[in-house]
Amino acid sequence: MALSPNSVDNSTITEQLMLRLKVPTKLRNLEATLIVFAMVVTSAALALVDLGTTGKLNPPIIGLTLGLGAIVLAMHVAQRFVARDADPLILPIVTLLNGLGIVMIHRLDISAGLTGWQANATRQMVWTAIATVVAIAVIVTVRNHRVLQRYRYVWMLIGVILLMLPLVPIIGVTINGARLWVDLGFVSFQPGEIGKIALALFFAGYLVTARDSLSVVGKRMFGVTWPRIKDLGPIVIVWALAMVVLIFQRDLGTSLLYFGLFLVLMYVATGRAIWFVVGGGLFGTGALVASQFLTYVQGRFSAWLDSFNQANYEAIGGSYQLVQGIFGFASGGIIGTGLGAGHPGIVPLAESDYIVASLGEELGLVGVFAILSLYMLFVARGIRIGINGSDDFGRLLAVGLTFVIALQVFIVIGGVTRVIPVTGLTTPFLAAGGSSLVANWIIVALLLRLSDTVRHQREEVAS
Amino acid sequence: MSELTLFVLRFGFLALLWVFVFALVFALRSDLFGHYVRRRERQQGDITHNPAAESSPFLPPAESPTPARPAQKLVIIAGAREGLEIPLDADHLTIGRSAQSGLVIRDEYTSTNHARLQLWNGDWVIQDLGSTNGTFVDNQRVSVPTPVAPFTPVSVGSTIFELRP
Image (cartoon, rainbow over all chains, first blue to last red; front, top):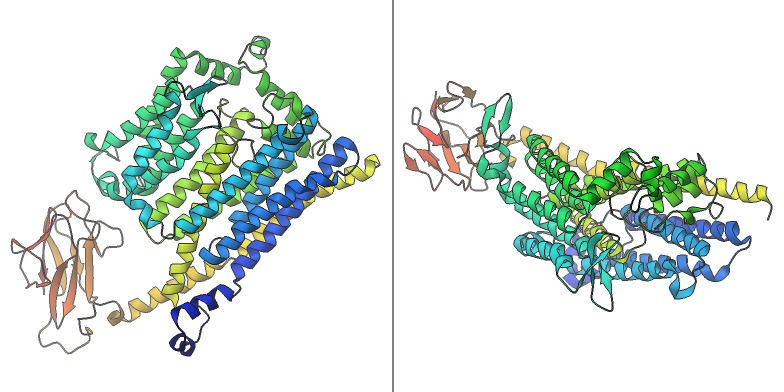
């Protein structure tokens, strides 16, 4: 801190605190500038959508971006008070992704003829507001991330309960074949989205204590140190959990997300690649067996490998959506048709699962690469926070939370572009969907908290 | 609005999107993280040149005159790395499974930071760092920093070593 020793002696703690809040910090100013920049880009996109679809500007709709700007700036102001040294790039990146998502959803509303409270964009806006308020609450209440480590088994319980909630009769609902939703009458949501954060907290907390026995113990054979049978317990339990999700909730993506998260954290914690081999083998075998017995997995695989087959294209739950998405990308080409000038509405669920295809059609390869770069920068920041972390729990948590986002991006965009079979996950921040937005904004808040702790401690060490 | 204007605007939007991405990358470059890491490394460098800086507060600096010559090397007499000799040329040596340890012992019974040998007034003293399975000097479990005479067996996990002049 830029205080001279004398002023420290003379002022009380409260005075120091007041002084500290007034000192403008470089990081927060950078963040504010970039947030304003992100808002400019979002407004430009919105204006282009209106120009492209109606040929004239529609001033009231600019309220969408102003609303987004106001709530993100509220988060920014909150950070000036409680997380002064947090990473300045995460919030602008997320603002732009969230903004581009709202713009694209609004554009799809126009082609579907939805307005007012019927419009998905309005709902997405409301959810963004809720998500940001939750994120502010998290960053204000969680002042020290190490406290979270203490409740690791509570997180496990919460995670498993949230994961299993959709299987409960009456409240659990099946939408589009996957049993991932809970309907409480007034609101329906995907508890698994919040569950993934609880599980990331649990995995990080658990692996900090278990890493020693997992990392060095075992017999050496064929140049590889094999884990002991009794150390395989945790990985088998998580695998079983992932298989339950795969078989009973019928969701390949979520299953892959939880298991992948655990494997990556295990690898980061122990530095042993053998866990990847063991885990990958377990999941691969499970998925292969499932694909033989579960028709939905089978359908996903054949739709992926043989998308352009007429029979697959016409089958219910076949490759129609995937192929339409690819046609969208194709008609977009390198620079896209331009916002408001394509036909992204043809693809079913274009505003949620296939939002990347919609963006690809109207912004082209250049635009999709820009969006992927934003994700890449976000993930790079998250891993950076992990590398610089001061304690093992913080490190693992930062890497785990970041990886949740990274894996989701890979699974969704990989599915839409036919790199891997299509699975039902949401594109973080872009896709329409309340639970996913809230969960991802909580991840943002936790990462900001972790990055604040990192720099804060550095300063204490350096001074 | 003409088709051409719209095209230019759309092109401009893509450019704006990329300007944002590059603005982020530019901000990353001037980010403070790198600065702090450098400063930290320099501090660590200072520590190796100034042994007194890291030693426990109750220990006097190691440069104090020594009447007898302290043990010069550590020899492992039993365990996975039997026969290994480590010269004791610094004023302390850390023992544990962590790769940062001066003596790395990898087995089931060793903790990450297991014990620490410290030169204290010309004598080597071993201090257990709260290990799970303990450190033994002459088959006695160590609870306080204990002097280690030459040729006394010290066991950490399944490894036994002794100090030799």
